[in-house]
Image 1 (cartoon, rainbow, N blue to C red):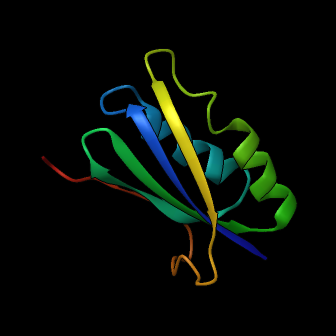
Image 2 (tube, rainbow, N blue to C red):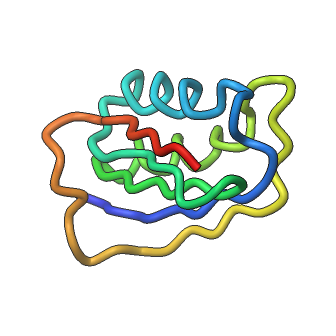
Length: 93
């Protein structure tokens, strides 16, 4: 089992990026979540088999057409994402 936390910065809100991540995680049968950190930053926690996590990481930057990703930081995590499935959480700013 592999767990990573990913910080994605860029033009993400209103582009379908969160839905893209949600569908990708579901397709790969990963657990975790995506949540807005602020207006231009998303935090993703993902866990699953190493091959599926690696595949997720390969495809994270292939988002919807109007998404503009400025940076992706991937951090190995020691703690679990603590979710039984993959969830998308929304915040209003």
